[in-house]
Length: 383
Ligand SMILES: Cc1ncc(COP(=O)(O)O)c(C=O)c1O
Image (cartoon, rainbow, N blue to C red; front, side, top):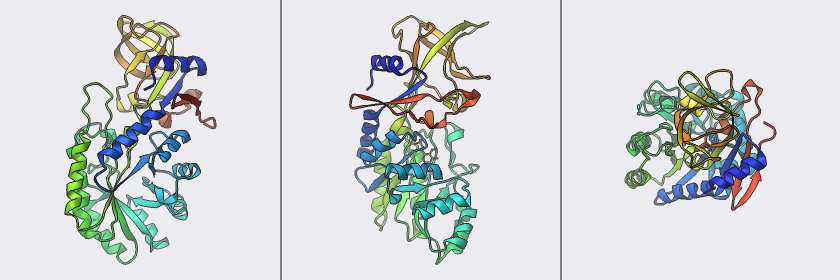
C-alpha cells in the first residue's frame, strides 16, 4: 500500500490536483479475482472504461487480463497497447454503424444489445459470429443509475424478443456468446447468480454458444460498513451450474471497479476555508470535473487530511471550484483543515479520471503510478 507520507511527497513533487495509482494493488486485485474463479475455465476482461490509462492497461495485460471495450476509441487504445483482437470484446450501447464496421474490420467480437444492430449485421455481415447482450428484466437494490438489467433499462435484448431473433438469424448469424451485466452496485451474490441463471437457462436455444459473459457487479467497499459480495459463494454457484451443462463452456467476466478503484487516490489542495451560516466549507483545487461520482452517484469517498492526520476532528463540506453545486463530501468529520493542506480522496481509481472533464476550462489532474517502489508520471498529456 502507498503510505500517507508517500502521497504527501508525491503531492509536493508533482503538484495537485493529481491522481496517484498503486500498481501493485491492481496486480494483487487481479490475482485475487483469478483465485476466486480458479475452479472453472474463465477469462477476465478488464472494463477499461473504469480507468483507461495506458500504463494501467499494460499492468493488467502483463498479468493476463483481456479487455472489455465500449467504444472504438477504447478498442484502438487496447490494440495500441498490444492486446490481440481476439482478447477484446466490444459491448457498445446504441453504436453507430461506423463503429460496428470498425470493430468487425479489426476482428473484434461484438455483443449486440439492440435489434437494429442485428438487422444491420444480417444485411452486411450475414455470416458473422456474434454475442447477444440479454436484458433479464431483473431489478436489484442499490444505486439505480448503475442498475442495468431491469426491465426499464436501455441495455440488452428483452427475453421476449429472443424467439423472433432466433427465427431471423437462423442459418446466418452465429451466436457464440451470451452476455449479461446486472449492474455496478449489486448488493448480494444471489443477485449476480440470478442473472447468470438466466443465461444458463437459455443455453438449449443457443447450441453454438461457447462462452457466457457474466459482466461484473463486483463491489468494493467505499465505507467501512458497506457489504461486499461473497465471491466464493458466487464462484461455487457458477461451478455447480457448469457441472450440469453437457457442453464445455468458458465463463467471462468484465470487472472494472474491483480491479482499480481502491488503488487510486485523488490528491487535492485546500485553497481556502469559509464559515457559512451553518456549514464550514473547505474549498479545494478540484471538483466534480475531476471526480464526478459524489455529485452524480451520491457516492461516498473517504477523505483524509494528509497534512494533519491526527488533529481534532471537525465537520466540513469539502467543495470544489465549479460554478454550481460541486461537493465532494457533505458534513464530513475530518482532522482539522488549514489552507494549503493536502487532502487524499480515497477509492478514486475507477471512474475518476476516466469520467473527468475540462468543465469551466480547468485542466485535468496529472496521473502518477507507483509500482514496485518506482514513481512514474503517467499523465495523459494529450487530454
Ligand atoms: C457492460 C459492462 N461491463 C462491465 C462494467 C464494469 O462494471 P464495474 O466497474 O462495476 O466492475 C460495466 C460498467 O458500467 C458495464 O456497463
